[in-house]
Amino acid sequence: MTGRPSPELLQKLAILLGEKGFTTDPADMAPWLEDWRRYYRGAAAALLSPATTEEVAEIVRLCAAERVPIV
Image 1 (cartoon, one colour):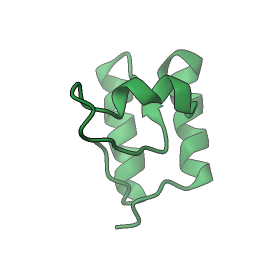
Image 2 (cartoon, one colour):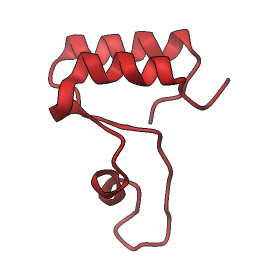
Image 3 (cartoon, one colour):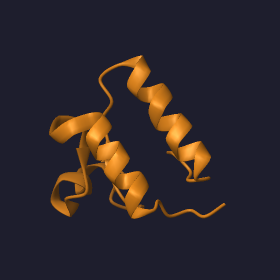
Image 4 (cartoon, rainbow, N blue to C red):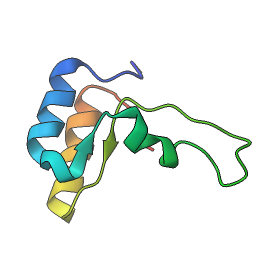
């Protein structure tokens, strides 16, 4: 498992989801990377917010092809 998405994968996901569904901005991602008690902090290459089940399926397909985990 590679663990990190390639720049090409991130570009495909950005095109698929558009501005409303894709971000790599640390400030936008910060609330989603920390638990409510602030004990645990995660890391992510991007935050994805798919709007349809078709988008979810395509995200899973693209990430599986590159062996990139999804949380």
